[in-house]
Image 1 (cartoon, rainbow, N blue to C red):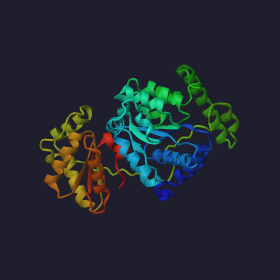
Image 2 (cartoon, one colour):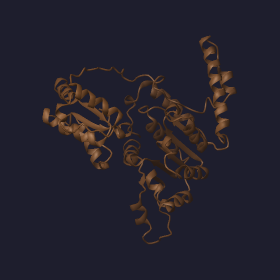
Image 3 (cartoon, rainbow, N blue to C red):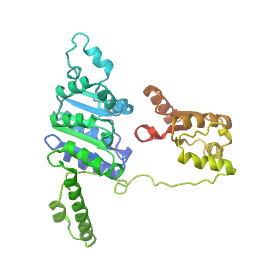
Image 4 (cartoon, helix red, strand yellow):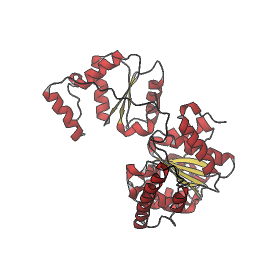
Length: 370
């Protein structure tokens, strides 16, 4: 049994996942790209697929590769919601596992494991051990960053070539560009996606086909004959906020700020020079005064504040304390995972912190829902 709450997933999202998960798990061993915008359930979807493959004994050995900041988040999600216990592979564990035999492969000690991209990149020895360990399924989160680190793509090509099952969780192609998208498709199917120029030409053909299909749909005619002629229309699944309904409607509430010309100039300068920190005299900043007033006005509602850096997180926290009596939780990339979890839990409790100040570096993967 799992601990997934279906009501936490938008209604259309539930239908999408319930249709996609059986389609994917019915394959011998899936090689798929789960691509959508942030917050539409890629992680839960991947875990549902993984869980089904494990309990049906289609796979046994699984390696999950994620950014360092998401290692414990994946571990907790798998354990709490799916009762799956994964080993966290890190350098400390590997050294401990090879104390009695320095030639032993620490990745053979456990059937299911999680490790970070940074851990893999730090050691050619660990790369070779991972490649020689043998896996039934490899899952990579934040796969759109695969080209960011020199040499890591070559490693993933080698690992993908040795592994039957491969699942990549990634942003939409529009967010990261066609070259990045092609690089991921090439990992999944190097025989089909072997040349970028050929792929680009095919993509242009698909765009023309989409226009023709749109005309048929508007005319209330069946476009399947056109879609089946070109490409994998039934193989690549995709979520978008424009197609998945059920999310609360977003409504912007704009608050005009009163400030001197010098204050306005400094605020505008921050957008072009990100290293500017409004630390000195921040209590006089009209944005802080507005935030303090808003906290009083909507009490006891909680507030999430997103800023561009750790320095601004600290500056905002200090300034708020001079204007209003309110519990403020911080959330930035330099904090330990344990401290982040504690602050997130404090903010999520009804009687906890009313305001969470978060650096935008962490807002997509880790900010808790409130």
